[in-house]
Image (cartoon, rainbow, N blue to C red; front, side, top):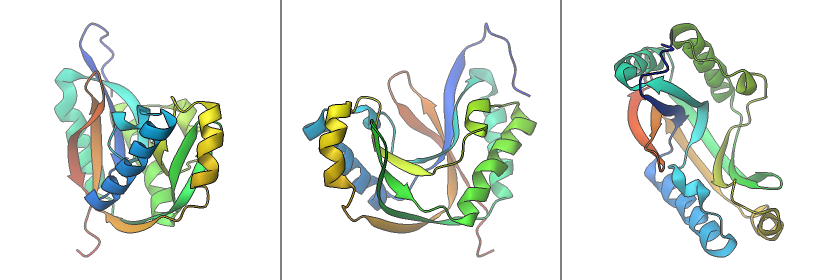
Length: 192
C-alpha cells in the first residue's frame, strides 16, 4: 500500500507507453509547429507518450518498491501492437495523434490500474470512471481556443500512420520543470 506520511518528500510519476524514436521525432516536429505557429509549448514538457496510469504522488524513499511492482506487472503482460492513425481532438484545447483502440491496449490499462490499486494503493477515481481514449498529445493546455480553431482544420485531415510493438512500460517522473523518463520495464515478449 502507498505510504501516507505527509512529512516525507514525494515525487510525481505516471506510467505510459513511449513510442520508438522515429515516432517521437515525428511527434516532436508536430509539437514544434504548434509552438512556432500557435504559441502552444506545454506538450514539450513530456516526451511523446500514451498515458496508462495518470500522474500520482509517491514517496522518494519508496521508489524501489514502485519500480519492483511495475516490473512484476510488466512481466505478466505481453508486448502489444500499437497503431497511430490520423489526428483527433478534444475541443477546444487538445490536438493529438489518434491511437487505434486494439483489444490488447484496451485490456492493458484497466489491468494496470487494478494492479496498482491492489499492490500500491494507487486509486484515481476520476480516471477510473472515464472511458479510456488512448492518444498521443501534440498540443494542449496552453493552446488557446482561437488557436485551436485555426490549427484544427489544418490537422484534422492530415495523414499520419505508424505501427510499432510496445515492448516496455515507461515510468516518468516530474523534475519540477518537465516529465522525464525515470525507467522502463520490459513487457513479456510475445515471441517467447
